[in-house]
Image 1 (tube, one colour):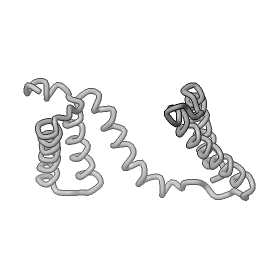
Image 2: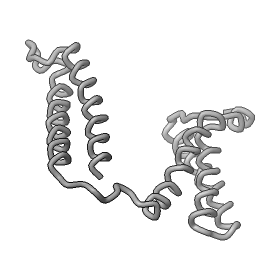
Image 3: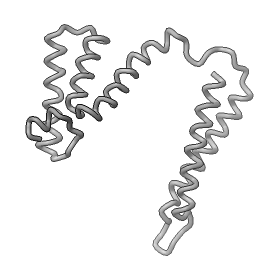
Length: 153
């Protein structure tokens, strides 16, 4: 667990350092009209860096020994993570609606063990309803793929 804490704190400290650097570039002081653009990001990043430093100190003081994640605990996490990553990647090629339908169908059938009619019905219905809500009612364009182009959207 110690290694995971140290790696996570280190990555977050790098991110906090990048935020501090950019906030300083924007200006962290107080201007005539109030706080400058980098004021709040700077102080939020400083709190994040201090918290990460506390995690590093706490992790180094604690006696480690047990693993961060066991194989048995990692399996359900990967069952969620891998299909989600595949959906994000597929969105780039087939669009959000088709990717979400494929994701939902796969996940319902593989993880949920639902019957085929329910799986196929919801894998089609939910992306169609989502399309209507975002594209037609709210007029918010979402990533589209070849199917939507073929249908004229």
